[in-house]
Length: 84
Image (cartoon, rainbow, N blue to C red; front, side):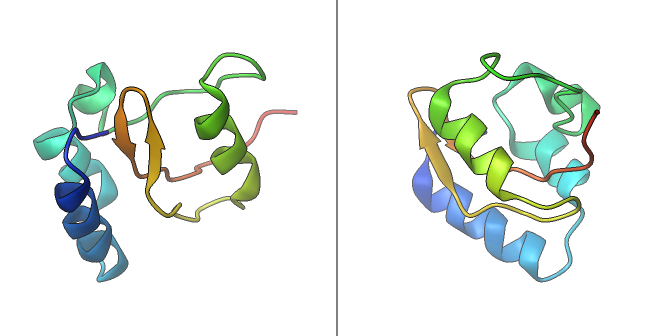
């Protein structure tokens, strides 16, 4: 998560070009999860804001989202797994 859309666009380009998601999250994110490379851990329905949850549900494992805007900023999401 970053506060600036332009920065989010630049970071997404870097990720698509092969940059390491976790390294970029540690360097640029404004989210408390930045120390864990952006890893939010497992969360269930109703735990995140709706726009974020909708974007996560559309992703298959290992995929990267387009930029998702919420009231907190601009997010790039990498889905790393699911919990049954």
